[in-house]
Structure formats: structure tokens, C-alpha cells
Length: 549
Image (cartoon, rainbow, N blue to C red; front, top):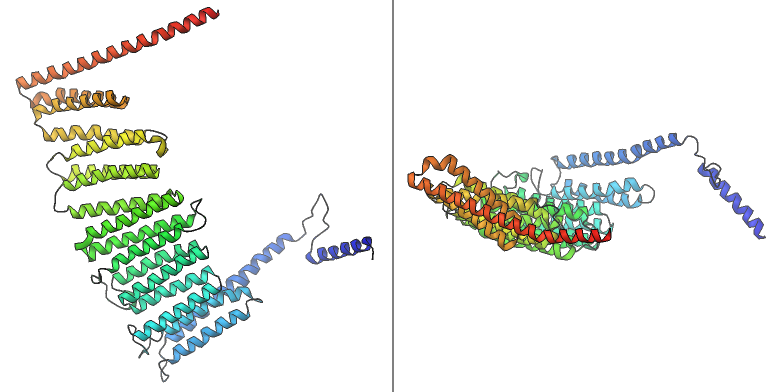
């Protein structure tokens, strides 16, 4: 057979395949769409609904029906009989899924979770739902039986390399922890589930499995911490086992470390962002349990939580320059530190506001390192809330507002020096802090000094701003001085006249007028000097242009 005959036969085979597939004549420059394409598309949709959806719903309904049957009381039967029947049915479903894996993959895919659920429920039937249970739910036998079933389910999901089956197996682990209800069994089981999901997310690159396992772990702890009403207990905060709350901090650290060990660290994937939010939600549960159940250790516990969360933020920044996760963990850590300071100084009076304002300056310092303008914005809102809360709640001013003003000036100066590092496009945040200083200093001195000295103290603030302008060459401080002097004039004309005595009133007017005149004279001299410097340059330009002409 020569080459031409081989090519002819190959042409015939290709034409035959085209006719079998329903493909029309395919030309080099034109592809004709087969008629009835839309009809076949509609048929494919109907096939998907009829094949996939009906099969999945049918298996779900069948599994629920079998579970309800197992939960009934089987009169005249041994107590272990419902569980034994459930085990046999579960084994049959799993074996059938293996046999149908090639011919009916859709049905086989849905039979496996049904078999895993039935296997767990049949084992749970040993402890619940019957008139006489085979095993008490808090016995060692129940622990071992449920733990064995969870391990079997985990093995099925791992061997099948299915993230869905593995996630379902982890869900059965959480259910087993609640079913037993013992503190250390719950803590141990949930810890194993979190550890397994962390290993799977790294080894198999399943980050969404870790995202799924995170809220499940904290929800399991929440149900246990409120008395475990899922097994019929009365509602109540668990106040024993104080060490259990610190286990949650271990879960938070483990989840964060596992997510940071993913291979794709050059970009911040959505799974990492969602995981950081869920993980910090775990701290909220930690805070609530320590507040309602272990108030005596609330401050120390939140200091530990703050150290762990801030350490996680530093880890994410160093390892992958993550902006979102760093922001979420850092702000949660700062929030924990704030709560610790409030609790530690609960009986110390307004001094807690000093520590909170100093913490605000520390937050800005770390935000500069993290290059996070979001932390700067959030920190300003917190700082503003602290100042407003102090002004509302504290009846007598003790000079703490002066600390607020100094913190505002120091923060504004730090932002000015590090604008490029923070990638701030405008000076909005710096102006906001300077505005706070402009308001806070007069407020503090108005309450600290007598009414006859208010104007003099405000003039001193204006002179301080002018001095800062000379030292830093920043025009904004000069404007702060101008505005403070104008505020002083308004105070003297409107309020100071009626509050001060005759001699004091005259001195106030003379001093304020003298300061205004001196400031005006200084700026006149400065403006004249600037004109003299600029005049030779203009003359030089005029001479050059004349010579060119």
C-alpha cells in the first residue's frame, strides 16, 4: 500500500467520524453550525437536571429515610440491631459506589457521602435514640467507637483524594465531639480535625478545606461552651476548665501557620482572606468566653491573645507581604490589647485613656512598617472614639486631654515623614490628626486653667505651633497657629469679656493685640525677604531675554 492509498483511507475514516459526531462539512474558511444545536443544548440541560440533580436528591432522601428508620425504637430486637443494620447498609453503599465508579460516576460520587453519614449515624445509634442504649455517651466505649468511625471517614476522603469527602469527614468529627460532650474529648477531637485539615491544605493544596474547618471548630467550641444543648443539656456558660479557652489560641495559630505555608504565596488568594476573617472570628469567641466565664483572667488572657495575633500579622507580612491578612490580624491583636488595658485599669479611673492613646501611636508605628494605610485609617477612627469617649464620660479634666493632643501631633509628624512608605496619596489622615490637636489642646486648657488665664494659655499654644513651624518648615503648623489666634480672639470678644475682671480684661486685650501685631510684623518681614530673593532672579531672566532679542 502506497502513501496515497493510506491518505485516502485516512480521509475516509475522518469523514466517517464526522458523520458519527454529527459534524457537517468542515472547510478551511467556514464552519457550518449543525442544525438542531439549540435543541441539543436544551436536551443537555434536561439531561443534567434529570441525571445529576435527581440522583443527588434521591440519594439524600433515601439516606434521611434510612436514618429516621434507625432512630426508631425496634421493639423485641437487641439494642445493637439498628446499628448493625446501619453498618451493613453503609458498607453496601460504599461497595456499590466502588462498583459504579466507572459506569455511573455521578451516582457513585453521591453514594459515598451517604455511606459515610450512615456509618456515623449507625455508630451514634449505640449511644442515642433508643430506649436502652448499648453504650453511655460519655463512656470509653462510645469514645472509641465514634473516634474509629471518624478515622474511617477521614481515610475514605484522603484515599479518594476528594476535598468534599474529607470536609464531610471533618464534619462528622465535630459531631462526634459534641455527641460525647466531655471537655477533653471535645478539645482533643477538634484539635485533631484542625490539624488534619491544616496538613491536608498544605500536602494536597486544599486551602478551602481549612477555610471550611475553621468556623466548624469554633462553632463546636461555642456549642460546648454554652452547655452543649445539642445533646439535651440546659443552657449555661461553662466556667470550669479555664485552660480550654487557651486551646482556641492554639487553633488560631495553627490555622494561620498552615495557610501561610501554601505554595502560592506571591498573590493573596481569596481562601487566605476568608480564612483570616474566620480565624479572627475565633478570637471573638475567645474574648466572650473569657469575659463571661473567666473574668478574673480576662486581662492576662487578652494580652496573650494580642501577642499571638500580632505575631501572626508579622508572619504574614514577612513571608508574603500580605496586606489583607496583615490588616485583619493586626487590628484584631490591637483590639485585644485595648480590651486588656481597659480591664486592667477598670478601677484606675481615666488613666486608662492615656494607655489607649499611647497605644494608638504604637499602632501607627507598626502600620508604617506594614505599609498599611488601612491600619492608619482604622486607628484614627479608634483614636477619635477614645477622645470622644473621654470627653463624654469623664466629669473633671485632669490633663489627660493634653496627652491626646501630643499623640495627635506625634502621629501627624510620623505620617508626614513616612507618606511614601505608606503610599498615601493625600494628606487627609495627617490633616485629621492635626485637626484633633487643634481641638483637644484648647479644650484641655479651657478646663485646666481659670477663666482669666484661658486666653493666655491659648496664645501659648499658638506660639508653640509657630515654633514647630520654624523647626520643621511645615506650613501646616503655621496655619494651626493662625487658627488658634483667631479662636483666641473670638473667645476674648465673646466669652472673655464677661468672665474676666477689669484689669484682667485690659491685659488680655493688650497681650492678644500685641501678639497679633508681632506675628503680622514677622510675616511682613518674611514676605519682604522672599521678594528680595525672587527679584534678582526675575532681573536675570529679563536681561537674558533682552540679550536674546
